[in-house]
Length: 334
Image (tube, rainbow, N blue to C red; front, side, top):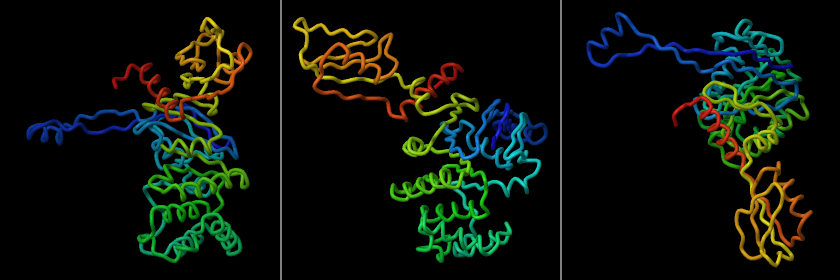
């Protein structure tokens, strides 16, 4: 395993300010503290060469977990290992094994051209000249950096800066890459370029990638597996197909029957007829069908059809259902 988290927990303590002048003075002399559990007993692992989507709504604990995995934050309890290292105990060794991109922040020098920032990082990580040139060529081929890498970072567009940040994060050839909302605010063309770059790093370079994002298209195209957290707790760990099976059961099958029964009564075991318009029927899940494909098989076994269409919840809807179910289980008010 490249990454292992066991019962990972992070609790933040904040001072509660009392209202009014007297309350303000009291807060200075005898401050009251409140505990906020941002991550609550989360356990998961990531294999070498795997791309994991680490997902959750705003405030779910995603970024806090990533910061513990990168060594920025120290866990309140639990254990975390990244390439066999406890990140917060050996930050220097951990930094050489990982790369990180935070979409709203940059590791480049604001007033320097991007290429000079990369040269500084080359020296920090002791990358030899031949490897540096080879990696820059590879990054340029995939991300088209040379079009703007002589421009000061402060003058780069968001998409240009993040592409340079990706190159900076991989310059020292890390085994593991953490990406926290890397494509936020990008246009669709640059997003697709970044997706292809990430897929290349996983498939061709064998890197482990942990990605947080709110872009469900990105998850659908990239993720082999996903971990969902909500209110700091693990909601789901598995493949996209497993997620749809567990939370995405509100599908419909639209069919046009070649020869509707004279009585107009249509029955298919395990399915419900939701709507009918002449020979056109809309079926939904009943007590037996496990998927729209299973439903279609059952329909075809009983009736000849001339047209069909399957409607499934998109990934965004499925995830919303997962979060709502988890919130209901926790009895958290909306």
